[in-house]
Image (cartoon, rainbow, N blue to C red; front, top):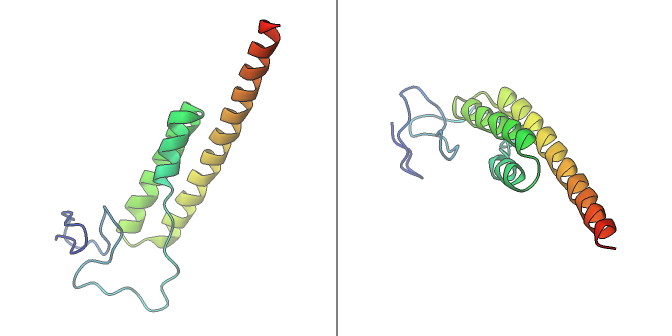
Length: 112
């Protein structure tokens, strides 16, 4: 089953595209569907690169799992996993800032 928006190939019976999250042809979103879940995959990748790599990798894993749950139509689990990913993103960002400040202070004191 191919997505009409991005063209990604999805397994039969999948309600949402695994790549972009769009509803697939022939599947109707349930009435009263809650707002779309924001998957923070890009933010997780950026914090893994620029802040704290171990915590960023955990955030990437949770974001990828959330994307998978969302493509299966399980928005409740996707929302929960996305919240966990945001937690690890914030923790990675905080640790990256602390590390930068400590390193800057170290070099400032060492150079005097």
